[in-house]
Image (cartoon, rainbow, N blue to C red; front, top):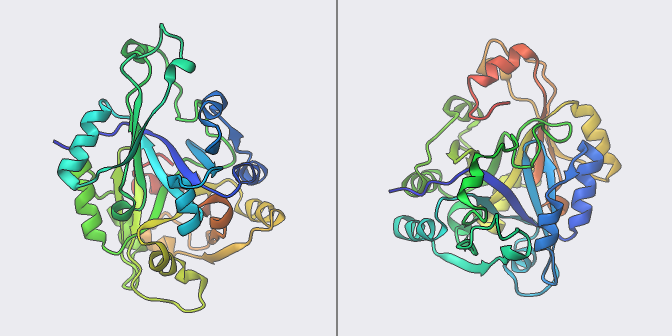
Amino acid sequence: MTVNFLDLVHIEISVPDAEKAYQILHNVFGAKKVQEEFANFLDGEYNKVIHVGLGDVVLQFIEPLAEGSSWDIQLKTKGPGVHNLTFGVESAEEAAKEMERLGGIKPLFTFDLEWVNMIPAELLNSEAGKVFMMDSMGQLGFHLEFGDNPFKGDLNVLPRPRYATGHDELIGAVSSMLHIELVTPDLEKTYHLLNKVFGSEKVEVEFANFLSTPFMPIIHVNLSNVVLQYCQPKVKLDKSPMGSWFNLLEKNGSYVHNITWVANDIDDVVNKFKEEDIEPLFTFSPLWNKLSEDMRSDVKPVHMMNTMDKLGFHMELGEVPSEKERRAFSELLYIDL
């Protein structure tokens, strides 16, 4: 039996300055603080916590305030970066047992959330409490976090917002998140672990093959409703910013390199990033017309913005395609662009 994750709850990121990370995304895209009551509930003497809605996802920025936590250790040893992905599960205890049985993934730590301090007793699932942080960074490039639903089960019949942000519309001048891009030393080993433990499959195969090169083969794998783009860099490109995948793997092992969105106006976005003293790490122009005859060859370059130090991931951004191109992409992508 594989572990059945529900939808992504948030992407948790260790950063040196959580408020600064939010301000950058707000100034550039119009991102908003979301789930502020929940973020304040998590905020405390150990970590400063801010939840930011961008597109359809919640970015949980964690600024460690005390020494020795997992987020603090990551920041000091690996630098800013994605710490974990948080998903919903039907049973946290069972999910943890199955992850260890199927993949040897053990808890990094567990902790209890005192939901009674936030949720009225009549709405509270009294059995919810323990949250598991599973130690999967070395194998997958991120830890995995989950806990039981803190609300009573019958509340699931109530209307729910379309996105995890709590909104029914995308937040900011971007698309839904396309994928989380990671480096790994072994594509097939990583895929087989995800397939064995979570039932993940290779997705967007044609698109992944289009992006692959002999120097860096690529696969796309789903984990619940998220697409993970795994890259296996094989050649060190000295003094080239496009060697960032190899350099990251050499420095940190498996790790998140970038998160990818499509922007409404790429030129405007780049100019706003420059106002925040952030330049493109590099740009590149895929030959989109080779992927589909409905794609133009003169689409503006994809920009990899050099945001790792401030946001904990690079931001990869293309520009929203035309309606005809959008239809062509819809046949290639796992997500709804």
